[in-house]
Length: 206
Image 1: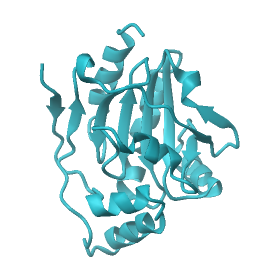
Image 2: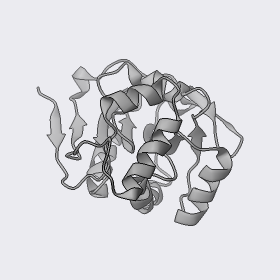
Image 3: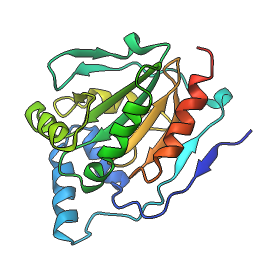
């Protein structure tokens, strides 16, 4: 079987590989710099994205990814506690325009799967907890985020895989074993696609 891909036109922000490498290495100011360029309309440092959704077959999923961190609420999150559930992980930061645009859709997905074996989780790659909480209040986001700007530990945990985060935003969907089952690079333009993938993974046995 081959990897399934879905394309969504009009992704507004993709971080180039060099910029992403800098972020993963701990150069978090780079993320803010790129956001400033976008908001100023210069377009410098950007490449066009196609919004591709990559979903390999279950037989080709890589090993489970273990990660942990402190949430913006002050609580601790450990992926080990989510084994047996489907986890939707969204990498974002507050001044990222497409992150703001897709926030309501991500919240709708949280509500849609509330009560199911689904965990919605953000990973903020640049901001402090106060900024993240302010964003969540403004956009009505009802799930927490790991604050990853200090050591980039979560980004690094996923960096070695074939479906590593390659843009801001990126959304990864993990199966019940903690394996990356799908990656949405850039803005989520069709929440129904994400919902379909989650439903497929919920139907799988851990």
